[in-house]
Length: 200
Image (cartoon, rainbow, N blue to C red; front, side):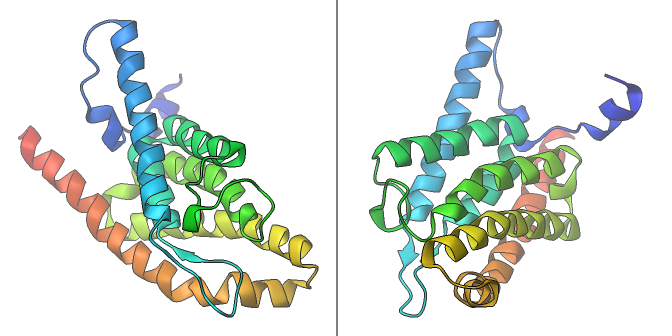
């Protein structure tokens, strides 16, 4: 690792969890963090409201994905959301509204969850989650990534054109995305402020 690369690689919140001595202990802590991230997204995904004008439910799952990405970093967050996706496809009913499988209109967003967690995690590794504006930027990047997967899937699944898919799968959620980004911009920098205070 070069000096410039090391300078860009900053701790994420999960790195502050004591791993203890030994490789096995470290692996156990990593597994616990990954499972905790999966569980958080699964729980928040159940806070979902079906909307009458779109097949995509309004859910807190996306917020969970972005926070998990920032807190765990790219590798652990990708593993966490990969587990969430694979288990849900296999039949665990923890997608929004208790759904499972893959044959539904919003499945593309779930594919985007995995990549978005990695993107936000990578930005957190560069310290983006330590300031309000940095966090908002990371949340924006994560949301755009989710939409980049969700909208094409919606287009193909419903057989509609791009403007229609944007109207069904993006526009109704922009206000909620803004609120989630603001909450994250308070939550994550505040967590780092507490860390800095505890380390003094």
